[in-house]
Image (cartoon, rainbow, N blue to C red):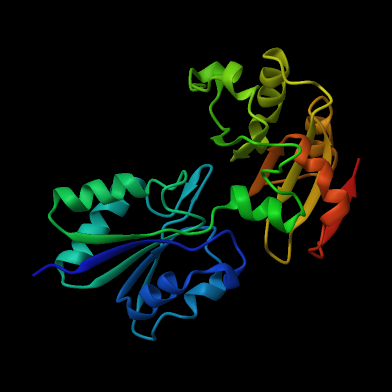
Length: 253
């Protein structure tokens, strides 16, 4: 007999944003493979006998590479264990959850996908920024922003993105110069408001705001680091009216 794998979204950072179904899966797990951005408080819901396996990925430092994660998922499930693959945010939003599900299906292992709240919506909400608004934004895009043009990895349609009202960039701090220049080149106004939200929804959250033409310099000045969400669009201006979450540091330009 084979076990069962739950591919679970742990949410954006605040442990209280964990879904009820995600909590249920964690509580019955024999094994949890968890990522770097999973709040450690969430792991406290696991039982005492649960095996915790760190799968965090950082530049130049990986807990387990993806192929090894696949191997462990299959191996543990074939040992008739209840396995949770716990990912920050949502497993199908830049989380490689679909790849892991495909491996399980190929091995004839049963699985369930448990969606989670993604940072591209939650972090702006905690910063007082709606991603859509009747007066300012009727379109919204979530984009991975770490593709490097010089490495031939930039596959984004910048001309199309420039016409989207609100754009949430994931994993983009190190590529901010290319992002801002590309959007401006393809028609986004240099004065378009931008917010950068570091460690969104956590006690370490801080937000800076600026313009498309200035935000790169501000990120350097304020030493903003990953994990950060970058939000581009007029909705950023609403923050002044509805910001509600108490942040560690706040600089508004």
